[in-house]
Amino acid sequence: DIQMTQSPSSLSASVGDRVSFTCRASLGISKYLAWYQQKSGKAPKLLIFAASTLQSGVPSRFSGNGSGTVFTLTISSLQPEDVATYYCQNYNSAFGSFGQGTTLEIK
Amino acid sequence: EVQLVESGGDLVQPGGSLRLSCAASGFIFRNYAISWVRQAPGKGPEWVAGISGSGGATYYADSVKGRFTVSRDHSGNTVYLRMNSLRAEDTAIYYCAKVSVLAPERVSGYFDFWGQGTLVTVSS
Image (cartoon, rainbow over all chains, first blue to last red; front, side, top):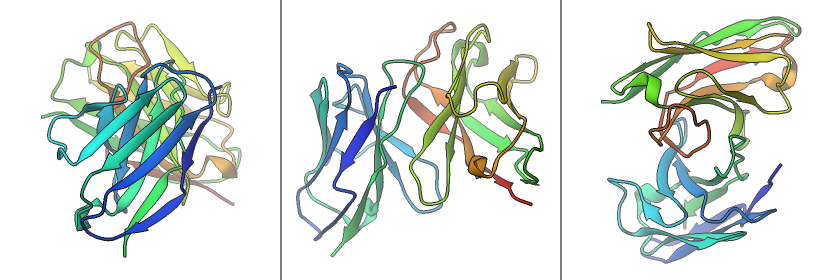
């Protein structure tokens, strides 16, 4: 099975900061990578698919990049409502594995 | 509007059984795969099982293979997860999630809609 590793596990930043998270796959997955945002007590919400395509309705401050084994999610200007845990998921097979998440807090 | 509504979560003893349901609406049910994804307290999501839109293909995580069975009822637009021989480590919120790609025979894909989840607790 492909393992997904996210870093850092947590991150604290100020409103307006540019923040980035990393997701690494144990094997190459081309661009079969999605990012989800999960707020406390809620189901995950799709932000980005195909590594860099923004889901409809998601603010343009979110962006994704990468292919193969290394991927990044960037928030260009952090907003208070972005406090959440962010997960990556590979979907190049039926066995879609998730990373362990990066928890984002506001300083 | 796409909606997925899970039900059936409960407190069950180790070794027991449970059946979860996922009622779907707002899309052509037979065209899209549905997966079950669980999340233990304080942990990341874990994909558990998936079923193609046609119901002809099913896949399971190694951690549940042989114990869980996923099925779908096209007349009722419902996906089920039958869970047998439950263990403490199966304790989690169970979500059903719709795969985004219109492909009745495909199981893999990213999830564009999720239900609200149903809690399964395995404890004596």
